[in-house]
Length: 247
Ligand code: PEP
Ligand code: MN
Image (cartoon, rainbow, N blue to C red):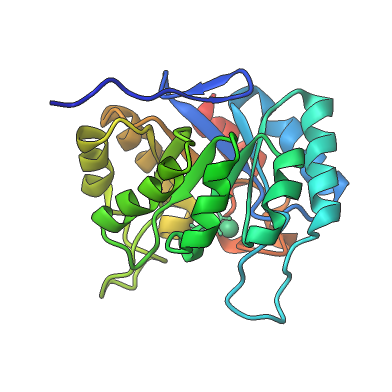
């Protein structure tokens, strides 16, 4: 039988109670960029996202502002009084990032990085664990076990699309898989329709579907001016589009 949901607390936000909206730019690019974006969507979000360390497919692409990005994230978080989530790529950065962000994100590319999972498990920070795009549900649950095994049960699972033969969209969102995770585990489960589809026009119907299916939230990429975004520009919503969906 399904157990009671394990509520994950990120500052004053309780993930697992109601529908949690996490949004913000793919990467923190400057204080102006993050502040402008966050301010415009603040009334419709629960948690602000923004990568300071970016896992890019090629090393010549923008890798994030790193420490400077963390400082900006914290500054904007304090100014607007909104909790944050940011990705940790490397075991060596876990302690530093924990000082600057309220929630740690393990991205798809690191879902099976067992030393990193254990390291975030040693912290008492809430963790947003994204499914690897080549990972089975069982392997995602194995990754969560690694975090749990170090004593951290503040875990939110995120379905962000997997690789299949289908190439019309960026990835294939395993929606049934997300619902199955809700049935099978007591972790809150959210979807990331931005990375899953790479297509802003699909965000609204997928958010509606997520709510209808009883999922615990979404993570969506938003940029005050997607055209100039340094990362994942094609998939970001404008604040206006975002607010239209989430108002
Ligand atoms: C992200 O959310 O910034 C990200 C890189 O997503 P994923 O790990 O799902 O590719
Ligand atoms: Mn992105």
